[in-house]
Image (cartoon, rainbow, N blue to C red; front, side, top):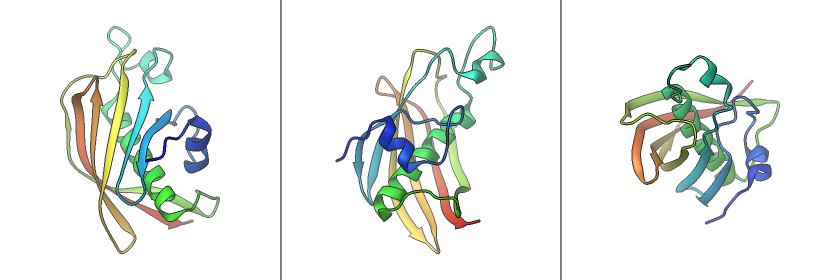
Length: 147
């Protein structure tokens, strides 16, 4: 159950600001599960337009945080790192549900559980929580592909 700080997270993800959605990893059990954290700040660039009168983290960015957590899990499981010759892609999103808005000041905890892999496509069950309360859930499919 390895913890990871931001430096270690950056070693396992190609995304950078403003698209980096993971600040740290609380737990990572290779091949099984990861729990990652995104501290939602009022300074996030998307809050200027979503929405100026009531800032809410876009649901697609919560889904992106799920995919990034899954990416860290995949790279940790494989013992590899992202490189210039491949890209980690979304292949599908199923059963996405948003239960409660995520706002500045929230700490988003993303739990991703590995389900299975078939022909290079990995399937994950994902849940996002704030203060232990479910705010979003989805099943996602991702794949590492050569460029």
